[in-house]
Image 1 (tube, rainbow, N blue to C red):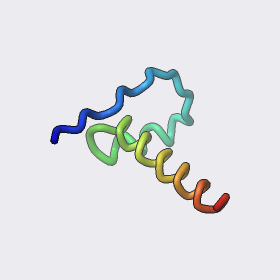
Image 2: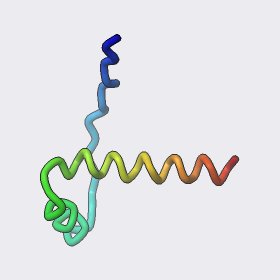
Image 3: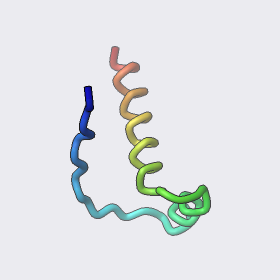
Length: 50
């Protein structure tokens, strides 16, 4: 079975310039990395809420 990914929402996000520079230095797909970091944070908060 093929599972299609959910479409992503287009947003404008303001980040500190040093943070953005660091994310970009980690390699390609920094926007995907931002998404993964925020998803991990969301999961942690959900676990805390129990």
